[in-house]
Length: 260
Image 1 (cartoon, rainbow, N blue to C red):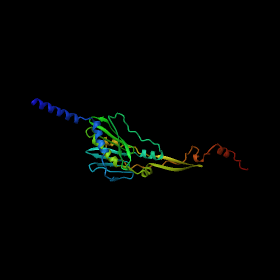
Image 2: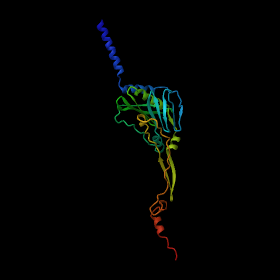
Image 3: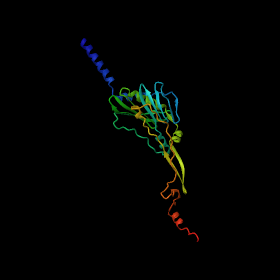
Image 4: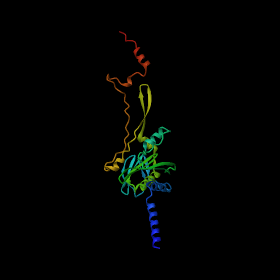
């Protein structure tokens, strides 16, 4: 009888161990699928000039710029970036493809879909990579927003799930993004008007703050106007005064000399 009880306890112990030793990919997949199936009955309560989103009260916000935020959840920091370059590219180039996330040295790669705030179905890619001791880099990339955070392997599934919760409530203002990060100017060059397009997309660069100094914040991104002046040569002439073509040059060379 005692031997039977021992065998039963050993079997229960082994079952418990196999359940707790699920792979990181399995735990990540389960956490993300739960968020995919959630009914998001919330409205964005953080309204910025370029985009808006909802974040749970348990998540704090440490740094905020025009196109990014650094959040804190259970002592773990993670960054959210607006993909302004993607929005600008899609507006001016209808066939612009979505940027692919960097999968180099990724231990876990999970792809899925979610219903965005506007009702559209969007794709996401969640990864775990960059292991340093007990710390790993967790990323969640979507078409218009990306998230990155450094945490322990144990916290990775819950961090990825929180990223997906936020992006499901997020939306952006295309007009404001275009006003902030693109410009079209008409430049007069002798006899011809040219329409030039200049992109000003900020570098994300906030991930370094998760590893080092967190006391400094970046200012809002600034729009820089293109230099539209003509080029000046060594003899003092300007490019605006040059002839348009050979005919113009010949015309100037054929002028009759002034009467003496």
